[in-house]
Length: 257
Image (tube, rainbow, N blue to C red; front, side, top):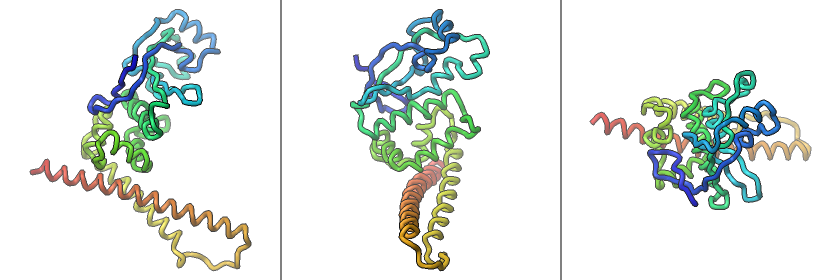
């Protein structure tokens, strides 16, 4: 039976899946560990978690767990847990999403919504101490394909704004000002990158050197192409951030009125 999953409660977007059960040890890649085998042997069966495991079934065979971090948090599982009393359910209710039912952009979107977005329920910072919600915003504006997929699929073609980001990041309970401030920071950082790129492409800044051999010439051409692509990517990112910042200002003015 098909089940339609709704990744975010405040957005109507759903993804078709099918429900099944799977061994907890298989999900956590612990089938070879005897300590965990004994723990799961006495565990409960077919447990439904608040955020069940989501597995992408690949067209070429095999599957991958999309929300591993959320699963580990719900099971209170970590590398350190090996030293403590281990309690694991024997099996869990899971949802399979067949990649063949999605196009490439929707696969990317599913990984995004069930991965880092869902993780906001269980953690504020990643393993490096970075705020997860800030990294998510950066990833959205640095990844043009993801940005466009969010706008076209979740927002009916509307340009991404502060209010939209607030919905996407609803699990983090952020204020409009926090999101707008981060957008301003990204805009400044991207502008600086663009200035650096423009300088590197400026022929007036180049140093006169002897005529290069073929190998050096090829390396120079490759470097120039990378710089050109980098400039294009930065320009797209700046455009996305500018649109979001402008919408934030308009919304702020409307609220003041």
